Image (cartoon, rainbow, N blue to C red; front, top):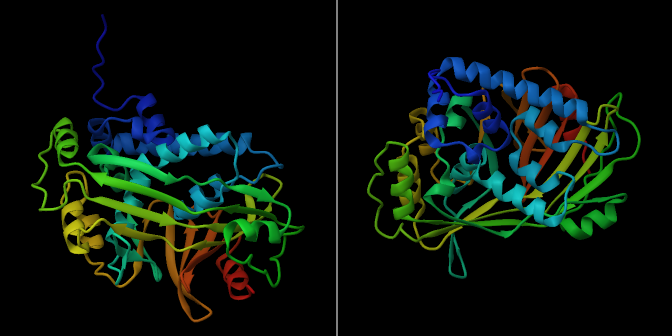
Amino acid sequence: MFFRTDPHAADGVLRRLVDEPAGVADADRAHVAGCGDCLQRLSAVRADATLAADALSTTTTPDVDLAWRRLSAAATATATTAPARATAPARGRRWRTALRSPVIAGLGVAVVLGGAGAAAAGDWLQVFRTEEVAPIAVSTADLVSLPDLSGYGDLTVVAAPDPQEFADAAAAERVAGVSAPEVGQLPAGVTGAPTYLASEQVVADFTFSEAKAAQAAAAAGETLPPAPAGLDGATFRLAAGPGLAEVWRSSSGVPALLVARVTAPTAYSSGVPFETARDYILSLPGVPDQLAAQLGAFTGDGTLPLPVPAELATTDTAEVDGHDATVLASRDGTMTGVVWVEDGVVSAVAGSLTEDEVLDVARGLG
């Protein structure tokens, strides 16, 4: 019988962190997050995965997922605009798996902690509504080390995304319920008519279980902090969309230009106040101190924190039609995008373009 003596993560574990992070044990995730050698190998695995996706992409289907991965900052938009490639059951499984990944879990934490709303909706207390987006610099190690929140309770997908492709704007608008952006002038090199993608609203509920959370923490060698009164059994609901995107594809299949509008994310709780959820979630084992400090600074002003891996992308600020906007650019120079919020709608422009080009498109939208 042979035993593994190499203290580092196996190649298969690193690949699974890219393809199916929910299937990686917390102990392995914690090791990778704190090991420089494993993080370097993880970056190489991600690069190989991207190259493989490039090789397999076709000119018939715009690979929106790949484009947003390179942009590193539009997970929500990806979920509501990616083209359908499988039957409904497979699509549902993929969305459920995505919700369990550390990256999406991190974005979910950011949304739930992003701010406090004013009114109750039925039996739900609104704890977040998006009025603007603000980037938060994080490291790849931060994202890898985030706890898998699916082990801390029960996740239910109330309404899974069902993205559909259309040849004309009117049909897409009927599904999305938002108007298709009108691009004033296409950037140089972007030609032809766009493909329209639309999806209905995405809704997911997470019910916290103190017993499950204690088991998950113990399995990772950690001790769960005592839960405040009322949190055990409390449910949080995250809703985003519906949304619509226009995609002009390039010869490689990666969008030369993508323009999207998505009804802004909102979050509700079954009664737990914003401050209670914020302070407890940020105290969970595995939440990096620096990330917790940044998220703890958000105090209910409607700002959606947008975690951006500093090794993969840079951020800047700009103005679009009187609204604060966040500009993101991949460090390899392949993708640039701008995101802003107006009247409860998140808009984004991205593509294989320069910052000036994406801002010109954004400011010229009708």
